[in-house]
Image (cartoon, rainbow, N blue to C red):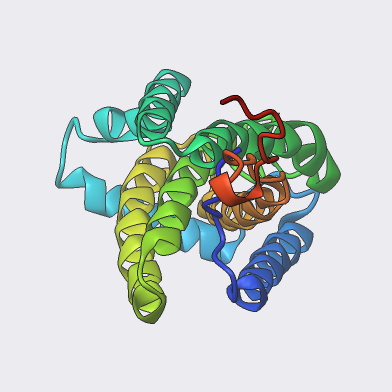
Length: 227
């Protein structure tokens, strides 16, 4: 495994704060919508606003939702893994796969049954499609921040996070507009994915670095001399 860390030294406290905040949002929203089968007043208002917005963009909803579909996610992950391995960054390759896979698996088998929030008779909170897409984008942001100079990490986090948020809002808005999810389903999914990717980055960083070649000075001396 490479020596380059995903979460640079000195960022542990910030990473822990991000994880705690993300999971607090997931839990808080989840408890608020647990067991519900219909939209609350906030979800209803946001859904109607989304519908009015996309009414001015006929035919745009389905194409904009493609980014959250499994085929699109797989293609993006394959590209990220290929680029990471080409650049000699196996930790990035591992995170690119583990991020969306673990996020989706735990979301499907643990969180959705736990909160029991349904939409059109299927478990909906948090949104699996939104969470998987958000996990991929979170991986990209983690890499951007990890490769930024120490003095520019906050700026890199702000820039990368803002770009990711715009993409998520567009894709999640399309999902809501198509009536696949309530807005709160997508919001919970984004925070779930973000927190989980940061935790996984920490886990991957715990894998020991690959030992390099033995320095010349530390090699055993040649005890056999010939004339």
